[in-house]
Image (cartoon, rainbow, N blue to C red; front, side):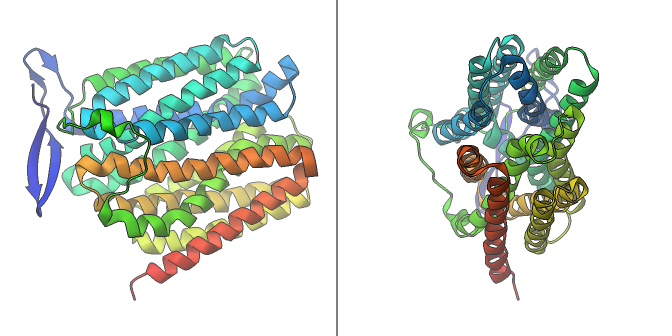
Length: 417
């Protein structure tokens, strides 16, 4: 059964899903239902990214391993995700979105089961590795599928949800896990069993969704590690690199280091607070991105860089003076800049790639973003043992501020006059 049709729009090949319901005995969701279900499945992937963060402190208390292993557990996810993006980021452009997404969600189930039955930190690191592979395979494919499944007049909505689903899901996952740590006797069982159920439901949605890409040759060749940005998007992509650095370094600060900051600087060991500080920036970011969907994208990214600059400065003062309200205020302001800036940049970039190169474009975007997310946090983990937690956190904040200033200058220069 053919599940995609080719059309010509302005000389560009486009592929749109056929609104099939039941043909030849197989069931297919209508595009709107498939769009909503695919977005929820993408949120589930992001839930699983944020969920383990509040549990790491519990693992350390239970197993008594060295603190630097927490950084390894955090960073190994980003490393394996990056490798997978390089190898398989554009695979779905050749074999279709559905096979890649089904395989990625099945691999997520494997990772959650390893988390659930892990007897020591080595198994947790292994689970994070598997999770990184699964997320790397899913990230660019989910984002491309959402743009393609979005209603014809709402393509910007597809790009917006593609950018907000990861950050919003991380926020929800971290906060719900923090609640579970605080109030549930067996939080790990509840968290990972629930995620297994969500991923199983996501597989059913993808199986029933229409395909949006016609298969084409070159799948094996696409597995050769490379970063190839469509020609029409290259100028904007290069100009967006400082913005990706600023936004995702900010995510790395709060997701990777904030539980250690709460413990080492503020001397707090609350699961609820750990979940909240991880959740605030992506949660505010997701709301800001959704509220600003109709705003001019270029203007949005300019103001978002100012928000990150102000927010990270306030957060740094809060860390340096051990004032928790200032830390949360800075996280809120910077988080709004994170979500609005990343979403706005995706709205600029997404229309510049045809359907059969869109996953490749998003693979490049997420490759740069997750390098900014993982490598600085890994370096910070090493520096903590050398210069201490407080100087490391303040230096990390200063690096984010520098990246946001660079992004602000580039985007102002690109603003039409």
